[in-house]
Every structure is written in C-alpha cells, then in structure tokens.
Picture 1 (cartoon, rainbow, N blue to C red):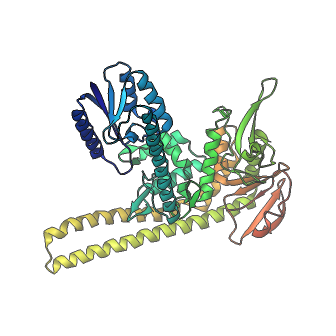
Picture 2: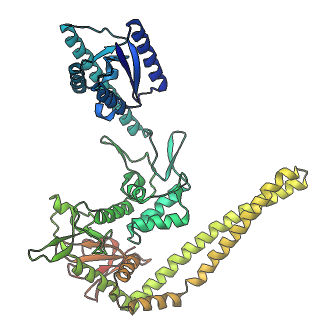
Picture 3: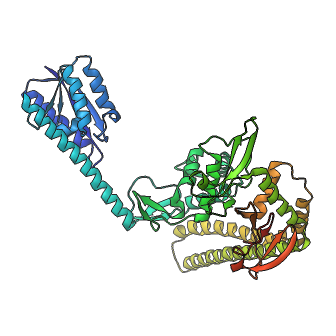
Length: 502
C-alpha cells in the first residue's frame, strides 16, 4: 500500500520542529503497518481552519485524483482540518477516490463507529480552533486596554523600546511633513512620493511608494487613536499629527480616491481639505453628476448627507470657489488688511527665526563646551590617540552649527516689510484664470471654510490679531469687530463674509 504524509503547523508558538516531529511519528506508524511512503506534504505556519488557503493540502487533494497513493497519514485528525465542513467535504471526496485518512496517534476505527469517531474528533478540533481564536482575541483586547503592543510591524514613524511605542527620530518628522503637504493640498500622492525620493527618505533602504503613503494617511494611529475589536486606547501610540490635520488629509484622500468614481482629474476641487459642513462639522468633498441632457455638474457635498446623517445641501463648486476667491482678492485690495497681515507675519516670523537661532546657539555652546573638555583632558595627560577622533567629529559638528546659525540670522533680513508688501501687491495684480494660481492663493491665505445651511460661508484666514479680536466682513463692508467667543454664534448669515482667524 502506498501512502503520503500530511503535516501542518499554525502560528500558535509552533515551529519547524513541529513538522519534523509529526513526520517522524507518521513514518513510524507507516513502518508498523507496512505502508510505503512516497511523498510528504507540508503546510508551514498556516491555520487549519480554511483548506483552500493551504497550498500543500490542495495539491495533495489534486494528486489523490491521479490514484498514486492509497492513504494519507496525519499525526492527529486536527492536522487534516479544524473545520468540520472542510473535513467532511474532503474526506468524502477522498473516500470516493478510494483514499483513506489515517491518524498516527489516534485510534483508526472502521465501520459505523468510524463515522461517530470522526464526527467527535472533527468537532473537538473545530472547538479548539474557535476557542483558541477567542483566547487570542481576549489577550489582544487586554493588551489594547493596557496599552501593550500586540505585535506585527509597527507603522512607519514609530519604534518600540522596552515594550513602549515611541516616535522614531528619523521617520516621525517625515510622517509629519507628509501630512502637512497633503492636508494643505500642496502635493498629491505621486508628487509627495517623488519629493521624498529626491530628499532620500527611505524605510529599510527603500523609497516610500505611493500605496505606502496612502496607507499612512488612512491610519488613525498617527493622531494617537488605536482600536482593536471595539476596544479603544488613545494613549498607546503617541500622536505625530493632530486630529484636525489627520481629518484634513482624510478629506483630501476621500475626495481624490472616491469609490463612486465620479471625481476625475478633469475637475480640481480647490477647497478640498478646507471646506467644513456647518451642520455636522465634517469635511465636505467634491463630486459631480450628469443632467438628462448629458451636461456634467460639479459640486461639494457633505458625506453625512449621503448616509442621511446630515441635512446640509450640496453647493455648486464654481459658485463657492468664486466666493472664496473674491474674499481673498478683496483682502489683498484692502490696505488696512494688508498692513495687518504684514505686521502679523513679521511678528510670527521673527519669533520663529529667533527661537530657531536660540536653539542652534544653545547646541553650539554645548559643542564648544565638549571641545574644551576634550582639549583640557589631553592637556592633563589623557590618551591623545583615543581623544582625537571625537575631537575631529566635534569640529565638523561645530562648523555645521555655525553655518546654520548664520543662515537663521540672515533670514531676519529676508523677511523685510517692504519685500512682503511687494509680494502681496504682485498677488493682487494677477489674473487668476489658471487653476494652479487659484490653488496657490487659497492655500496661502485660507485655513478653513464653514458652509452654512443657507449657503453662506464663514471663511477663516490663517492669521489673527494679537489682541484676540476677529474682524467680520460681508460684501466688502466692515460690520464690526467681534471677540473670540462671539465669532461663531453671532456671525452674519450673508454671502461672502469672512473672519480673520489663526
């Protein structure tokens, strides 16, 4: 009698040794029963719950149809299958082909009792599989509650030390830059991929691919949200970006990669990632439809409307984008607003540059201190040959820090008030027909747009006054100055008004 051996181990802390042990026991069984083994089929690190996902098993079933063996020997019945449905199906097929399934360590009962014994063994195997899965899930749920990592590959941007998840010093800033570029609408996925490739950003020596970048944008762990089977832990993953930035990026991604397939590259939705529904505060996205005559209409819609969770109506893309452009142009032509913007930009920029210069100066002081300590140690008789490599390394670091400090100080002169005024003047004199110019203007000045039920829009700029006052406008005529706590509930309900806000 010719026979084959089928061996399998899953992932529950089993190894290649499990396969070797199974095969050894099966060969001993074959010798005792005069069975000639002609082949061994092995599925390694594969669950026994689904037969079609086990390549060696399916090949064995196919080979059985060639009538080259008379029996299959397994170490235990659950190695054949842990699903009663699969076990019944494939044992029935093998029986028709005249192939028996024998166990090397369990009783091989024949006759009517065999049906009962097979049923019991198969039911127990399935029970064990389901119970094990439940235990694993309970353990992983408990890990999620306690903030322990469940294993697997960490998302790009994170590392693990002493069982604690931390932001990776190299990858974390890359993730933050990615979200900033994408959420602001400045770059699409392909452009970010090429930009990062040119900058030399890699993971494990390979450039980031478009699909990997898209997965990063979809992953809520980057704003600190972790969920496993309904269990949420917002403290396991330290946030690399804010929830607001993540939501913006998701809105851009949904608009660009809509499964409805209506959004094509033909239409550029300039307000994606900035337009917020005033009813449910969800980011709205671009869409389109066709009239009976075949004309295509473009509009913005709230995703909640489709799911009947929001009553906000759709609004014409062209009408809303024109309103926003009018607000920005109106700002550029208003001398008082421009001067306000210039002074705010100077204040913020100088603060940032000075802070940057102070940080570089502090690092340079530390480097100089280390150089002095090494020099002093050499003077006091320390081993010169051991000290000189570190001294040379510190001198290189010092040169780089001094150059960075010079650049930071130089930037103070670049951000001159007159230069900024000239720049703003050049913007207001442009003819904004080109889509890219419109996109640039909106991304430069607009932080967000809140659309109201009556189709009026509160347009929020990227700056605010140091006194905390916000100027509300409508139709280019100043109404009044409102304090921070009034700006939402008392905003006028008319077309084209906007609010200065950081």
